[in-house]
Image (cartoon, rainbow over all chains, first blue to last red; front, side):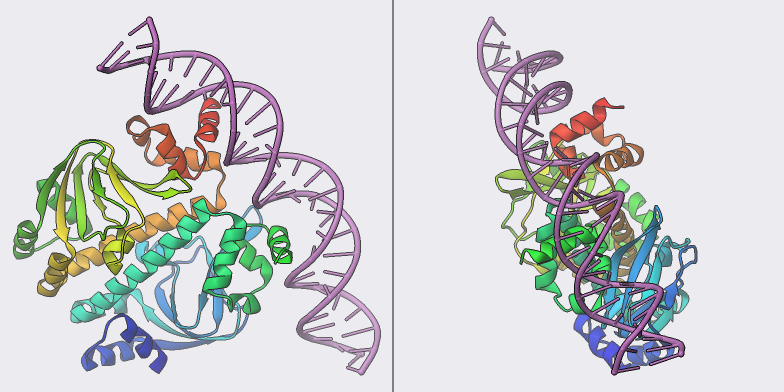
Amino acid sequence: MQQLFTHITNYHPLSTEAQNALHDCFEKLTLSKNEYLLNEGQVCRHLYFLEDGALRGFYNLDGKEVTHWFGFEQDFVTSFHSFITGRAAVENIQLLEGSILWAISKEQLAELFNRFHEIERLVRIAYEKYYIRLEERFVNAQFKTATERYENLLLQSPHILERVPLGHIASYLGISQETLSRIRSKL
Amino acid sequence: MQQLFTHITNYHPLSTEAQNALHDCFEKLTLSKNEYLLNEGQVCRHLYFLEDGALRGFYNLDGKEVTHWFGFEQDFVTSFHSFITGRAAVENIQLLEGSILWAISKEQLAELFNRFHEIERLVRIAYEKYYIRLEERFVNAQFKTATERYENLLLQSPHILERVPLGHIASYLGISQETLSRIRSKL
DNA sequence: CGCCGAGTTGAACTGAATCAAGAAACGTGG
DNA sequence: CCACGTTTCTTGATTCAGTTCAACTCGGCG
C-alpha cells in the first residue's frame, strides 16, 4: 500500500489523518491473468489503484473486441463513465497479467470528500492530469496517421510492446493488426 | 451573470457566501467576431464562461488550420493544457460570433478553492462531465467512420451547422471539407 | 458589374481494411 | 523432452473510404 501513498503524493501531499482515513477505505485485491475486473452490463462501483500488473478495457463491436485503453502499475483504473453516472458499463476490464489492486467504493470516496477537503483536491488534480492525457490521445486519434501513432507509442511507453499482444495494441491505436505488423516491418 | 450561476447550479448548488465570492472574481468580457481570445505561444491564464456567442479552438498544422473544438453559450472554455500546466498554448481561440464572456484567473480560482471546499467540489464535478464528453469524442474519432461521426453531430448538436462554416466542422470531425460535402449530399 | 469566400463536384491517388493463407511461438499433457 | 493444438504474428492480393488537386457554382457585397 506504500506505493499508493507515494504515488498520491506526486499529485498532492496529504495530512496524516487523511492518509489514515484513506488507508481504512482501500481494500486489497489479487487477480490472476485473464480474470475480469468488470463485465459489460455491470455498474462499476469502485475506483482501483493498480499496484502491480496490467489490464485492458475493451468493448465488443460487431463480434470483435476493441481495446481502447490499458492500465499498468501506478495507474488509477475504473470504467469512468459507469463509475460516475452509475449506469451500466459498455466495456469490460480484463487482467493481462496477475495483478495487485487496491479498491475503494464510490460511496466511501464521497464520504472522504466530505470529511477531507484535501482528498477532494487530490482527486481534482488527478482529473486534470488524466484529462490532459486523454486530450493528447484524442488529437493523435483524430489528426495523426497510423505510423505516427505507433511511433508516438514507442517513444512514450515502449514497455507496452513486451507485455501486451500485438492485436490489442493495434486496436488501442485504432488500426488493424495486419497494418500494425506491416508498420513494424518497415523499421 | 445570472446565467453563469444558473448553469453552475446544474453541477452543484453553492452557498450564498461562495456565490458572492465567485461574483467578485469574474470579470465581464465582450469580444466581436474574428477576434482572438488566445494566440498560440501565449500562456492561457484564465478560465472563461461563455454566456453568449460562439468560438473555436484551432492550431496550425502544415500551414492548415485544424479546428479541434467549439465553444457555445453556457460552456466553460480555456486552453486546458496551457491553463493547467502554465506552459505556452499550441492552439488559438478565435471568436466565431460576437460574444459575452466571464473570465476568472487561475490564481483567483486557486484562492477560491482554498476558501471554499464547495467550489473545488463544483469544479471536480464539472471535470467529470467534461471528461466523459471527451471520452465519447475520442471513441468516435478512433472507431467510427466519417459518416457516422457526422450523423452523430447532427443528433447531438444540429444547431452547430447553421452557425459554423462547413470547413471548420469538417476539421472538427477529422475529415476534409470535400468529404463532408459529399456525405451531406447523400442525405 | 466583377470579385471573393463558401460550398460542391469530378477524377486520380493512397493509406489502411479486409480476406485468406502461412509461419512462428507457446503451453500443456503425455 | 517431444508432439500437438492454440494463439500470435506475418505476408500477399484485393477492395474501399477518404484525401488531394482542380475546376466550377452560387450568393453576397463593394
